[in-house]
Amino acid sequence: MTAVQTLDIPSVKDQVSEQEWKLRVDLAALYRLVALYGWEDLLFTHISIRVPGPEHHFLMNPFGLMWDEITASSLVKIDLEGNIVMPSPYKVNKAGFTIHGGIHMSTDVHNCIIHTHSDDGVAVSTQKDGLLPITQHSMQVIPDLAYHDFEGIALNHDERSRLVADLGDKHCMILRNHGLLTVGKTAADTFLRHFFLERSCTMQVKALAGGAEIIVPSQETQTLVGQQGGMTKEDMKAERFSWEPLLRKLDRIDPSYRD
Image 1 (spheres, rainbow, N blue to C red):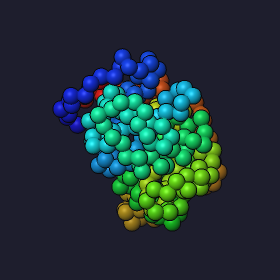
Image 2: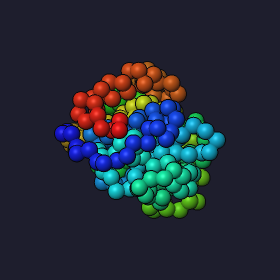
Image 3: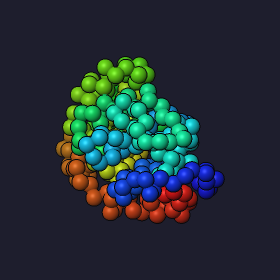
Image 4: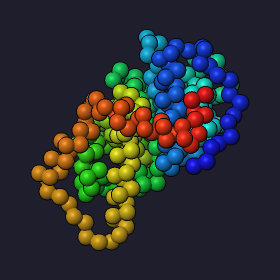
């Protein structure tokens, strides 16, 4: 990935708290990483993160920027209904926040949400049996995985309650005939869960495309791997063991996400 041309976006660093600025940098990094790994869908789908405070405000991408162009200052602050609450030269896709808003409204635990329409994620979402326990990656994800049936393009706010109910206490979700979704306390653990979910789907698609008979480990082994992986833990220590190296990777490619 080559460095992108830096857009002329005024910095908002001096207009927000130190805590919010860190969240902005983390969220901009998430968008860059999803683009780096090829999971974006042009301008569609979103990643959101909660801004601490009683106002119930969130950050999400400005509509009209590609994900590898997003910076900390270009992110737009919105309320639970997707209304812009801080001056910005950009607009947001309010309809795209339907899924995110429903989850954010339902709990204070899930501060970050990633939703993608990746090729392999959507492919597995169309398969009747969903994610199969055929790889080490998928066996770590499955104990923390929920499903939500397709109800059409997510524009109906009534769907929020059903999606939240289906998610339950899980952190990963396959939206049938639609795509993938992960939630977490921080940008770091949400990305790590999403990485394992996306990789599990890619491995499954390739394995099934190979045409050979698939080996499915015993239930005992599946349970063991799920326990060993620790994907269901709230504190995955992802900040230290994966997030910092990922940020260094982005800095080597193009550090403008920090602007």
